[in-house]
Image (cartoon, rainbow, N blue to C red; front, side, top):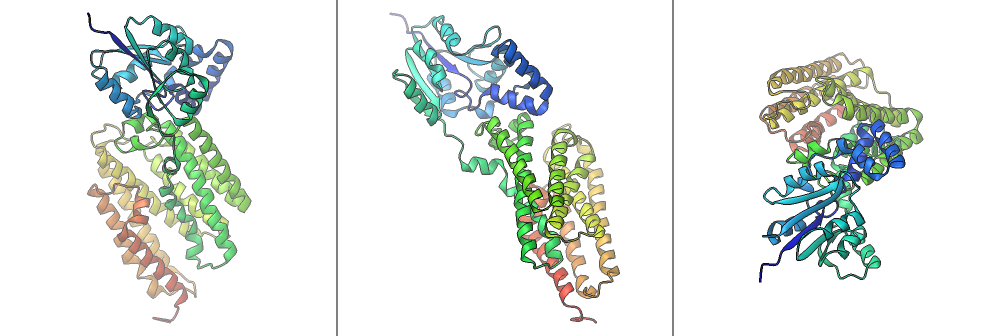
Length: 475
């Protein structure tokens, strides 16, 4: 008696990988080319789902390697010895072949996707009946796979708990669980909105703290402004992550982000993003019109940065510095504290230096890249000179402010102590960067590294003490 011929048929979307390639392509198309999306919708309404998929072909992701379900992948790699493997999907066949080749590198696989016909449900089931095998195993993830399971001798499930419940209500077939995919939890959403980056928005408190304003109403308004700014920032982070999906999946650190890792559906993420941005801007206008306009300007410039300015040499770090200055302006509007031109100029110089610092740090960590956000390795020395020059300029402006301050409520002798501390802080940041040790965003580093925290705390105390201790050292 001959060897029993076994064929394993595995669904791609939601089974072999944790994402739906069509939904992902549609969301990416909405963000990158709304005109193409409208054409695709028109094709869907007039010609059907197959033409809709083919219209979105250029917007399918390039890589799903890190989105593969580990249990399903292990099953195909180890259980399928001497078995024929078939991967079925509703996405275009050319894209399907590229994806599966990346995931199952050492396996001989037969691919079937949507080319001449929309390859889903009953169409897939008919294709299964044509497979020449004595025993067919089908791995699916939802009730849409019931026609395929009907044609299989062995039925395996690899979807979410919710899909499992829906499936059990829709069929009496004996279907075994191969694995159950965990739905995204609070951890995934908190990680996606990058709560740790909210620390940057503490800059809204700068005008209030530096003016030594103790008005409770001003503090309450500024606290609300902090959260509204954070909502908008988180919303724009999500849009940026959807746009940069392919790059993030190739990046050793960013590939673990929830959207890139397939843990959060891009469609759900886009809705969350719009909700956060709308809530943040609306909340800003509830504080006062100027705060609303400033937060709206922040959102607009951030999105312009993500879609247009990120890869423009020099423009990108200038845009980043302006975004940080807007945070300070939001704080001033929310607390009704006037932000002086000198302080804004100082902020622009400091944040420009830190923005350049981030570019240098990124380049040092990506030396093998021929082009990183518009820069190349030989730009490091030029960028370092620019960044250090901006830092020195900010020090000179601070020195000028302390020496030429004519306020009767300001003790220059105490304020002079700020200068060496500031010089140490900015020098230490640049030395850390030049050694390739600045692994985080310089702003986040400045607010979380103990040396920077100590330096900033000392400068802040000296500044406040200089305002309240006139005559303590000299009259």
